[in-house]
Image 1: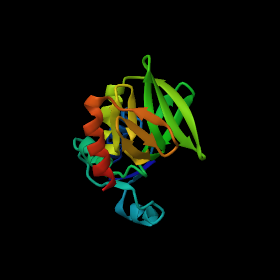
Image 2: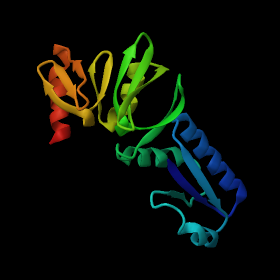
Image 3: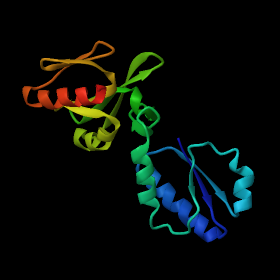
Image 4: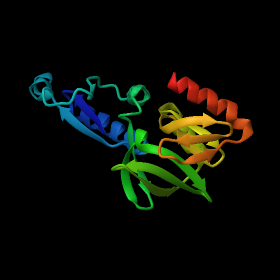
Length: 189
């Protein structure tokens, strides 16, 4: 959950900033809360109750909102980074580090997610290419045309297969083996 504070004396500016932030984060499907303050004093009075990871906008300029949010999103660690996904089973907020892997089956994406120590599968429509681009910065690698795997959950990479911590084994085509092995080694060391 991203927590944001907007501090500006002009209501119109606060509302514009809030709308810009909401539109941006909604398109990214990120959960958030926004608190607005009309003065520095009001912000300081309630500032102690705001979590440490808040983003605070003090500027009236709404043109750089997306760049600021992108910079923050790029720095979020995978162990805290999360996103809300709309699955066939309903909308769910998922920590990226809880995703073991994603499998593509006939235009459906199956997310294999750890929940309460067990693997649960969630399904949604989409393309693996779009998801690969989005999750690359969170330590996911495409090991096969149909599989996107979280490097954090790989136990070992052996000749032409990946073994995950839960025991699942996923084949690696010869053409991708070197790339997967190098990515895994770089991630571990």
